[in-house]
Length: 306
Ligand code: TA6
Image (cartoon, rainbow, N blue to C red; front, top):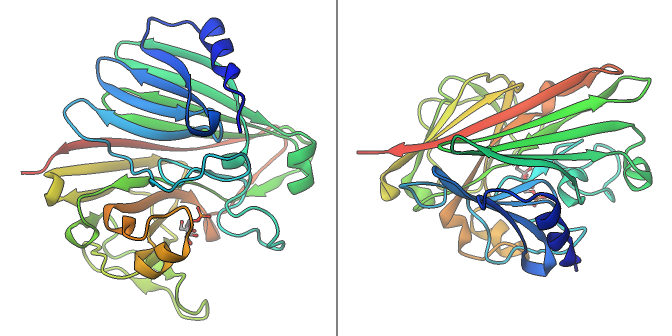
């Protein structure tokens, strides 16, 4: 349970023009509600987690499970989980949290402002005893979220220690779609990928043309600098996904069986979501020297599909 008096403190400290207000969410989660001339959005300070992004003229571009947990120590299911400092299971200790600890940590709110129809939220996470127990490094992690006619999330890792360290990470975006069998994902034509559901010994496979999904899908594309598009005739919209600081990407849908086995995932919810994740994973792992920084970012926007 999160203390709901956190939001009272934030409303006092970070007063704005009314475009940014703080409120206790499910489980007392401290939420930042944005409403400006270009969009509405919802950000959880827990996990620096964008939960909703609604550009004017469209329905929410992000998907959020109706079964999500809102408990400390558990990730929110949906929106844009910040997977850091490792992507997937911990490389050597299965008892450590999947996808790292950033998404299950309470971040520090640094600043909020709205200028020219763009609301900017800056959040930071630095190492402490808890994080060092999980990952013995000193770091500063900064999330800059800009919500306007498009949504930009930039995650900067600063190595504040005396030695280099390696990270894998993801902006693990869950997109809201009309029906999983009716969408196409472009931008991966001709690219090699690892099918994580098949043996790791298999050679990488090649994607030909648009990705259509009709079964559990968990592809890691290992050499892709491009941008991606989700074409959704059912919602008559395209979602454009641009990125920087990333040479890899993941496309994921759990399908029926995995959804059923996942407590915070409604049995039929796999129909209405797809993850297209901007990552540094697999061979795109990043080594950060002492005092150096690395930024990964994604920019999400929608347009009509005629
Ligand atoms: O990004 C795909 C993936 O790594 C899948 O393998 C699946 O585990 C998914 O992330 C969700 O992971 P989570 O720990 O949030 O349930």
